[in-house]
Image 1 (cartoon, rainbow, N blue to C red):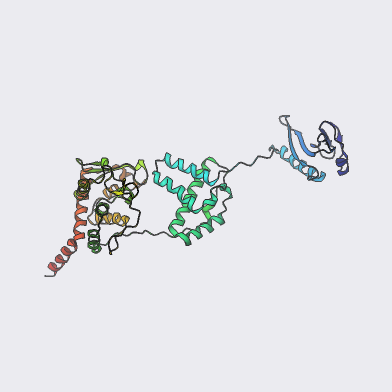
Image 2 (cartoon, one colour; image 1 turned 90 degrees about the vertical axis):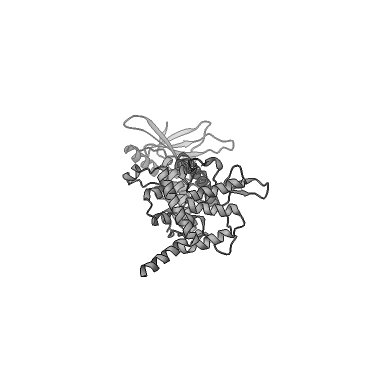
Length: 408
């Protein structure tokens, strides 16, 4: 291999042949000029190559620096010196190809798989994708490392103004969860999250319990309902503390009439959170009314579809008003049950189990306590009786009479 002290003129004047040539630069050890084969028009491609043997192993390492004249002689020599220093430090001289980062859509798929593995409800899994497609669709095809914190923060502010603070926070939480899941298998993703720049909207608990003095108005509003299914559905929510979608999906096969219980196979949290709920006498009477009507062989609270007349679960998420009096939201009724139980001094563990809330992980004693279904049913009966009296206004009247008697 010829060794020549190269100059810009010599590089330009090197004649191509029918075979590639390598010319070592005497001015910089390890730097070579590669002259490609002669083309049909007599031209050729000239490029710079760095090649050197490792001192420790004796292995030859080679890498291409770049083409001439984009890389002139001075730039090529400087690059050769940098590569020499890297080899002396034991570093690789081959540039690592950039790894392809997952797109947001791929991260969504990974997180959905994780949710299914953890037994999350299918409704929650679907909602994640539906809401991200609706509110950040242009981002789905972009690599995660291209999501700049500034634009994520700006989008959160836009959503806060257009769709409300709660939805804006939820979209960003979806994005954060997908990013964290993707980073478990793509460790080269930046550790800083794109949502770190988000200034989260303040969230306050909504749907406060219905005050006792408003329960008679609630009862009168239900009496004006023309739809008995909807009326019984709302009462069932009040007397069981079930979540709205969970109560709407009650099937007859899940009711154990002899034991007086209701099995919920897939509540919030998925199948791993399945539980059996003891029913009060009032709740059983509501189900018995629905069974007597025989409107559906499958659903306790069916809603007839206009298209084909098929029975389906009662649609609790739609606005439904049949009275001039505003009816409380389903979740307010759940909070009302919990408040009534607390006023009756129902054991906190029992309230937690009826609501199917997660047990506190840092409380070992809580995990030891497991009330029987019969004891829980007795408490459910007490709460139902309390609520029924308040709906009739009897509880308030008794308290007023007691107060008058004390004064006398």
